[in-house]
Length: 106
Image (cartoon, rainbow, N blue to C red):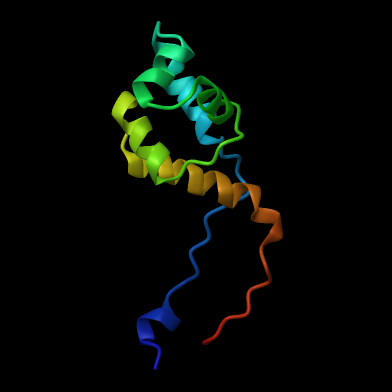
């Protein structure tokens, strides 16, 4: 049985069509722009290759837990925040592929 509060509640509609940047763009704007360190130095601090960091910054690498932890260690932005940036970006990129709603209740 589905609780009444579920069927009585309004659908949460967050506009997924609004632009959400790739986490690499967020990193570039919020972090790289505020440091004198070069990418090879940052990559070394993170424990990743310079190529991997570059691919992340240019939007070709997805943030998974391991990378989120490494980003947290050099930016002081939580791993959860980096994962949320990735999730928001993924939802934005797939917004046009949403299946039609077919509610199982109501």
